Structures are given as C-alpha cells and as structure tokens.
Length: 540
Image (cartoon, rainbow, N blue to C red):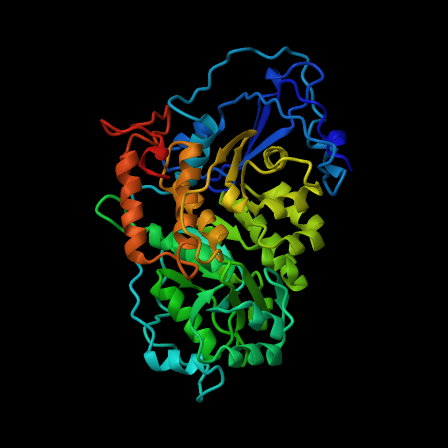
C-alpha cells in the first residue's frame, strides 16, 4: 500500500507520545492532538519506554505533552507492507487549530533527543558500576581452534578464565543475536575466482565448504575473533564504555547460541575478555557458527557464513531475566533469516516493552530485509525505538528506488521508529529523530577494511545516547569517527587503548559526566569554557 494512503500530506504534524511507564509496567498515553490543524495527520508516533525513578520524577515527564512540526510528505515510492496501520497512523483528528510558536518545556537543545537520552538513562541511578574482569583465553585453546578439528574436548568444561557465577544486577545494553566466530583474512581476486565467489557478497555455506576455504587460507595472514555483526557492536560499545576517572563502566551482555566445541569456548572467552558477558550456556554436542570474511585489496569484503548452532536462539529464562535488568535491548537483523527465531524476537521485544526497556533493531543485510520485510516491519512499528540500517537496507524496507533520497527514506522510517540511523559508506550518513533529519559527513580515513564499519557506527550512536551527548549531530559525528577508526584498520573492533583515548576526548568535549546535563526537569546543555558543542572542531 502506498505510503500516501497511510500518511496524507502533512502541513503541521503533531506527535503522540506512547509512554509505557513502568513502576514497573504502568502505561500512560499522552496525546498532543489538540495541537493539530483540522484535516492534518499526526503521522509521527514517538514510542518511549519510560522507567520511573524511585522519586517518580520521570512520571511527571510522561504526563507532559509535546507538539512538533514537520514538512515531510512521504513519497508515493515508499511503501509500507501493511494497510492495517491506517487506523493507527493518522486516523484521529482534532478540530482545534494548532498553536504557533509554542515552546517546548525542555530547554537548551534538541528536545526530542534530550527525551530519548533521559529515558535511556532514567534507570541509571547512583548504583556503583562494576567492571568485568576476565583473564585471557588459554593459548592452547586458541591453537586448537585454529586447527578447527584438532584435539579432544569436553563440552562440560569451562574455558580458562570464565566464571558462570558472575551475574550483575543491571545491564546497560543486552544483545540478542547470532554468535559466530570470524575468520578474517586478506585475499586477491584470484582466490575469490578459484572458489567462484562474487566479490562483496554474502553466501551461506555448509560444513564441508567452510573447511575447504579455511584450508586454502592456511599459511596466509588471517586471524580469529568472536565475530558476528551484533557482537562487533557490543565489543566496540563495551570498550568505549570502559570505566574511567570520569565515568563508571557500561555493563554489556549478549545472549545467543554456541556449540560445546572449541570454537564455542573460544567465542565465549573472547567476549568475556572484551568485557561482554555471554549469558547463554553452550549447546551440548553442537557446532559453533562461523563467518569467513575475505577482504580484497580494494577493501571490499566477501563473506561466507556457516550457521551452526547460531540458528537455535530461543526466548528462555536467561534472556527474559537479562531484558528485565537492562536499559537497551538490541536485536540483530540476521536472526530473521532463521524461521525458528522469529517468534523469539517478538517475545523478547514484547518483554522489553513491558519492562520499559528501549528496543534497537539492526537491519543487518539487504537480502534478509527483502525476504522478511513484513516480519521486520511488524517488530519495527510496534516495538522498536531505534533502527540501524545502511542505504540499501533502508530502501529495501521502504520498497523504494534510487530516485528517492536517503533523507526522504530516513524521514519516512521516522514515522514508525523514533530514532533512525542510515549509513551510506564514504558518502556519509543520516540520523533522523522525530522527523528531524541531519546529515553526517564521513570522518576522514584511509580505508583498509570496511568490515564492521556499520557495526561500529551503531556502537557509537548507542554510546552517545547512554553517555548523554546533548545533540543529535554530535552523536552522529561521534559515531562516524568510531566507524572511521574501524575502516582504517584490519579487523572489526577498535583496541582498548584507542577506545579509552577516544572516550576521554568525548568527555573533554562535552564535559561529561555532568550531574546537571540530565536534570529531570528542565535540561540545559553545559559545555566547558573555551569549547563549543560542535564536534567538527576536533576533526570529526
């Protein structure tokens, strides 16, 4: 159904705040419909999951109304997969004229961004953060993993340095996604032609095909890592969020499925070492999924994916408990490729809604979006607060062609998801918040390996939100710089040293943490003397 059938031309657009405020699960609806002009459509729905603090101050925020204006009229080339939303998006009208020049009750910056930041940080409180401390994985295990099938292994044994007793009271971010071990190497075009691989594509392979490619890589320059799109994001986020003299550590966890083989132990140990707690137990007698990432001299990446046990993700008590203790749940789009996990995604997102947890989705792959577009839209429209996609994935979601600009695509998706991030490689990116879209130019770098750039960008956005960066454009510049660091190196993650240095530069720029920057009532941006809030000034 054409978008114009759902969202008529907008002259003055209002906002419905659907606040699922929980102490813990109380729902409050606040509508700004009395601010609308006759025959106008409110169109934009801003979904906030608010968890009240013990003082109940956030409850007063949920009872406040907000009006907004937008000049965006969705193109008829953008399409929604369902017509059932016509009653939800734009069916209600108000006979009262819109008030002009009404100031927001928030001061000192982008009101909607401040609200998302406040909601994301509402349950932070003054609890002491704990830093994950894990020892390095046994060198002998790494050697065994490199040989794929070498040596014996007891799946009931815990790898060196892992403790299953470590459980934190709260998580800042919990991820639900595929647990895959990455084999990353540099190859020439002749290598790709030898295996009849199309450069820049992603292909699913079986166990035998995986073995042939790995054996062909023997002796070349390649390395192993606890990979997967989601884990890349979580590791970068965790390293950016390490404890410092100015900020407590951000606690990160992941749930997924690994086998009881050496690769599974390697994956869990590596995540623990990167300060990401892998909560799920290994599947007995299962094999761990892998992704072989082949990077050609022109920095293009060709990926071969072996699913293994990563296809057995389910909504279990471990995942339910982690969601209940988290601030943000991020779901990996690759899970839509596995039919048995789609129900688990819906259950996890519903649980997050009930608990007042923000939900972030990653589109992950354009072919995945194309094949599972209705299911993706269902979760995005009804449960999500944040969407991460690249240009091709965003256009696939909208079923639009190249004639529609990314700015228009971002605005359209903003009608269904409050915060939308669309990356376009060397051409920059767009971030949309409640209909306001800003362009983020790319950060300069010499490209070495583009693998993981979008994952790092998503980590930068989450870090900016949860650390309280006060401007939408500032968050975008921060995310672009994090992505540029990854593109300029071989590998999908930044090192701890680089992450700490980068995070400290962000702290100096914005004067974080500042107890007043997130005041519950009336937030004002505070910038250190002699500095401005424009990140461009320090080379972003």
